[in-house]
Length: 272
Image (cartoon, rainbow, N blue to C red; front, top):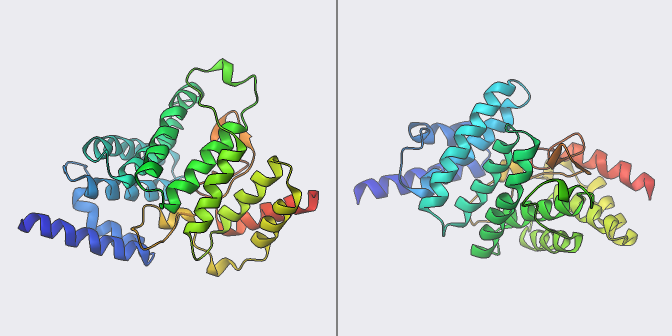
């Protein structure tokens, strides 16, 4: 019992620091468990969150290190979701790490894993319909899959089906669940309305992006996997690329910053 109490206190302290955006301090608390040897799924998904954040930071400085971080995070995420299949965040993190680990495996493997990635996010939403982050990333998957050219899906097996209307429903849910507002979700709402040929709604959301203040916007990757207090998970999205299905434009949808989202919205508005 004492050990369980110690772990609970550790997780509470780590979450508190994470939500204060003190990422280094939060991860330092989890460092003794970074090997993934624990059998506590609540601890494991937070360790995976640590690897996801470190992966993001390493992308711009050391691609090889980033790949190693993605692989380790993926391995631990498999254990976490096996032990905690009924825990929403275990499913969310399993989907995220499979998606990023797939980047290191090549196009064919990425396409083959897409259905499983989508399944993890769907399970996370099923377990917790009020998880803003899960709604947001599932919307991204639906948007990207819906954007795959009709003839391309036949070249690969296990490619799931999606529609822009499904993407919209999740982005709208994410908006309802986030009191503070998420600039990247606004951008995605605008983009999805453009795909649905609803220009007035698209203009409304894209304008909201351009008029937002950067300092007031949290981004998804800074709040990823936060606890139920309502913090979020930050991102942006562009047009799907066959070579990078889960990424968009020049930036990955889960790694783009607020300023980049505003720049993209401004470009889209000029075309309306």
